Image (tube, rainbow, N blue to C red; front, side, top):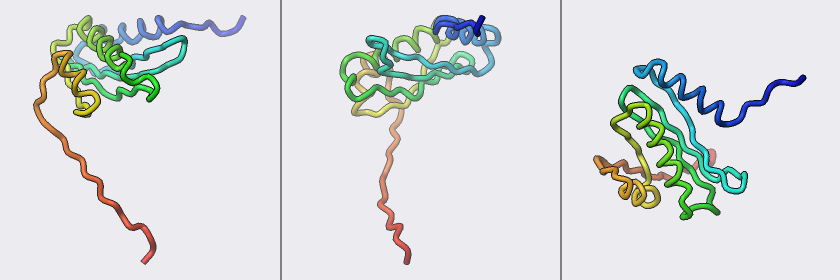
Length: 124
């Protein structure tokens, strides 16, 4: 008999068990969105006490604008809330994630600017 295969539900249950075992510790989990058995979006969350730190959300270009980002956002918030989290923090791009985060109830508290400096890497 070969190794026993576990479904995605078993992995989620294992991660949630770790989270609830010690709510003061930091734990991370990821959420995937599948459409017709194809993964189209993924995002992560780190729980630190009563705070959920949302990170790493990405949606395949062909699936943008079709609700995948909203789905991973909603599921991370639901799981975090089930674990007693009372605050969620996220850093997102104003032009892409911003409108979705605003509709979900997030408030802007700061702005991060990035600048690109072209470098001439040719030997001198």
